[in-house]
Image (cartoon, rainbow, N blue to C red; front, side, top):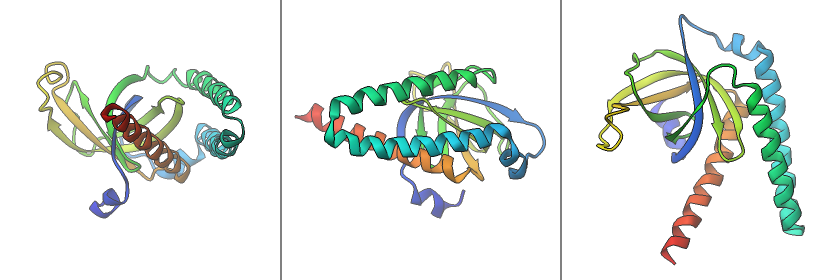
Length: 189
């Protein structure tokens, strides 16, 4: 991602469940697009966006019903996430995330430009985002509390992320940022 693209998106510190696998060779965007899982996920994202719009309208009229329906939606997303856990078990990790990349601590150094297939399960709704990414940078972890177990910070840039996934990430980041700001204000007051 270019520096200009990085500046277009907010970055937040968050906790995400994630898994990734190394890709040997080059995978084209066409192969990812034609994947049945990708098409299924695109439909799921479309439904999620529609549900969230309807929930915003319902929340103003009947907040209790909106909470119940939101919990049911989260439960269904959690069940759906369970269907995809065959790849590799996701780890719940603190991460710095934006719509164009993610950074997280890791136990081993990865090669710069190494391709990975990344699955992110955004919390608390368990929305699944899958994309190809590459290792953009690897730094030494300066945190003395975590650097023994995870001495590296891995920076991944998303490669040709599908528009629907990117939109889902943007919505998640804006919602989480709002939540984090409200929580800070509550702590101050």
